[in-house]
Image 1 (cartoon, rainbow, N blue to C red):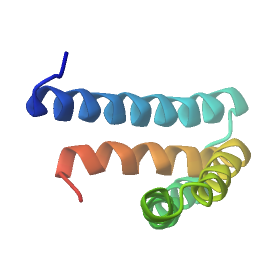
Image 2: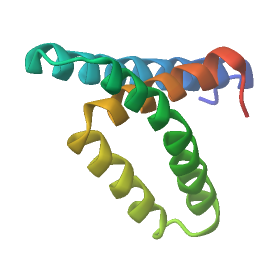
Image 3: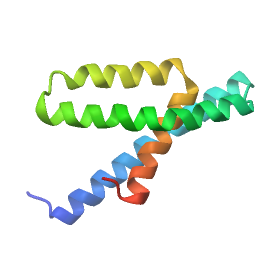
Image 4: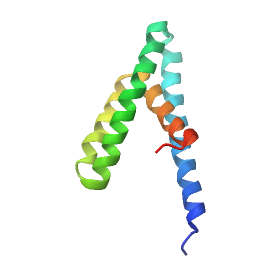
Length: 104
């Protein structure tokens, strides 16, 4: 059974919002457990937003043009999210912002 296009778009948007919220919450939980959040960490979160946008754009491009190469971009995203809670918060904010502001 084929679903209407509106339902597919709503379902995808909801999935991206849920993924963004989970990633954001994971970064926040890591900061809370670490009990260390300074002004410098807040700045790192803000600086991670352009980097996350760039990596997500690279991932999207490689996913459409070279599916196997997109694994490398995805691995970079996952690596930086695991290593840095600031980047984790940044990626979550970017995913949520993409849905809220309708970009792209």
